[in-house]
Length: 263
Image 1 (cartoon, rainbow, N blue to C red):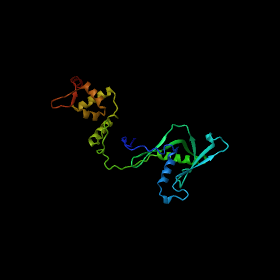
Image 2: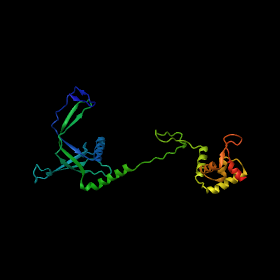
Image 3: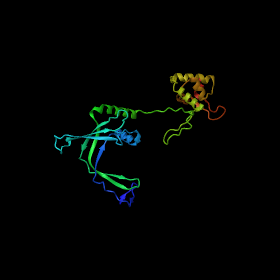
Image 4: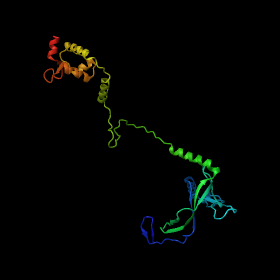
């Protein structure tokens, strides 16, 4: 019994009538393999009478002066049949090798019956002949450049607010900028541009402001003095008290000792 393509054992037996037939194993470049497959799929009407149904032919050259056991006495060359597209060479040298693990070729019919097509006696490495190496190298460079070229697509997005974009887990959240947030950013950026005054000079300015008006809010003092918020809070902590309740709730006024000194 034989094992089917799906891994199950079937009741059909392995056909071995061609098990001893000599078969060649050929390792060829992908371009040559695709060219052979293209010619094989062509209808008979497009093939010339000289080519017939063949996709390639092998030319064997034997040197009678060399011993028969010498591998160099026999040279193999392959020529593709039919029309070849682009810069694909038609002639190839075949380097024969007999030093490989014994292998057999198997096939399976449309009914699922397995066959032994033969035993591999020679292995060939196919490469372009010297006169075709330049064209083949040019073809390889073109193929490499084509694969390395990235195709970029430009798409116009109508809704650019980010509401239809979904962030991946662990990434940032997409938020639309509102006018309030833009105003906060503008205020923050302006605060970073303020320069601190000398503390003694700042005390004189604060005393003059509190002479004009006894109670001030932090926002108003920032506008009048044009000083950083944290620096101004430190000065207010030294010179003023904060009203948590009463008619002047939320405002600063001078400490009693400074009011007396001013009076």
